[in-house]
Image 1 (cartoon, one colour):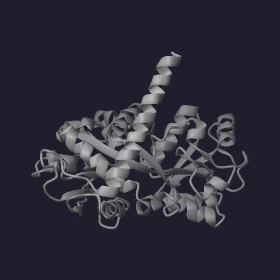
Image 2 (cartoon, rainbow, N blue to C red; image 1 turned 180 degrees about the horizontal axis):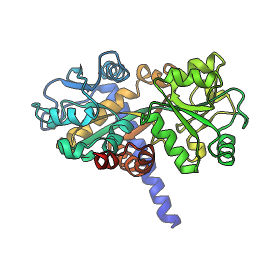
Image 3 (cartoon, helix red, strand yellow; image 1 turned 60 degrees about the vertical axis):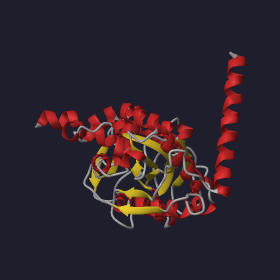
Image 4 (cartoon, rainbow, N blue to C red; image 1 turned 180 degrees about the vertical axis):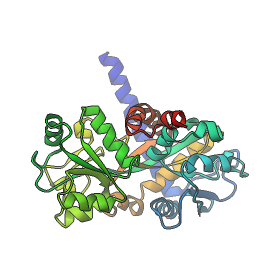
Length: 352
């Protein structure tokens, strides 16, 4: 066992070194087209949202970082669509010339796009499957923030919250960001995992949740990092847990703030930003795109995204196969929490 483990470590070290070398070489010299000529023309990043949104900014920063690396222009196209839109757009792209060659990578919110399959009858309506996407890479996570009122009787840490909530079932008041939002699903997952029962009151926005907790009218919530940061900075709320592998700045200076990883919670819930293409895209083209976007993500001008520029944005570098594995894990882990909320597609179809 020891020799086998050692071999695995050696291969892992070599793989890491090779990845670093390729990224460095790509950054310094630029990528060359493949032997089959790909890419022969511009590559367009598809943003399935309105102009100026988080995903649009992400695509444009990636576009800028690709300069000097890509041998062809990198364009951005904002193409908003309705809920479940990632998979509808992927279906639509399949009919676009060049899409199955890799010319139209789409920006993915991995958690949101994957949980759509548990809420929307996508397979029934448009014959969509999670395997319709071949993922290129993920770069980062916009973490979800657990906030609590300033005078919480359990203290300032998340483990103390869990202990108190278990000992006082049904007493605490939880304000959710709507019902069935990603943040609500994540909080339901945590409560389901730990057997916690609370009073739930939905709110219409992240700021409404923060204001309610800040006023002491509710005990806790799970909200977006930018809203949590402004309310924390104003001294209205406490932050005790950030659902990420590491606590990002400036919260890393507070010993009362835990990361999800410290508490055994994997980074399955959150907004993992990734790029993916249609599943028919050749592996060689996906590999080329990985080299391009990975090299771009290593540039300092791109990495400033998770160096305090965007609250709660933390690096989460993943290869395409790692992202696809995460998607399968999300489907398995969040089936029951979504059923608990009452939004599972099985329940909706049954009611109809």
